[in-house]
Image (cartoon, rainbow, N blue to C red; front, side):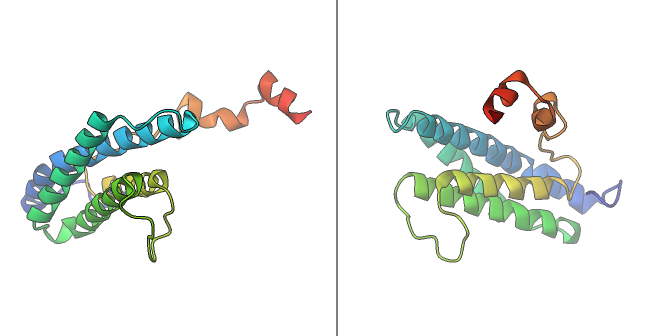
Length: 159
């Protein structure tokens, strides 16, 4: 939740400076998440699309570099911390997906998709701290409420 409706010049400069990195992380998380879901849904018959995997990896690498090059103002520090965590978790997702890392240590992540999900959550947290950097929230969409709809297919599954 954004507490103040207006922002100071230093914070505005920060938001402009990290906007591209935020968007790159958002795009990369969607791309890698989609690739991982497709690979999982294919019962191991489909390999991860290497060019798309490389594009997503480049987006994360460039975003991480951009984020680290910016010094946040006091009001942007919370946002900045979430961006750094998102980039770190996306890096972990790539390492896990690429087989470069299997032991995660103290992180509660065991699959690349879980790491992507955690990275997206960090982006959601970041987007709630400052104006101008938003994630699309589908929780209130027509598809977000399907658990409350009693469909004929659901009744067949009950028995």
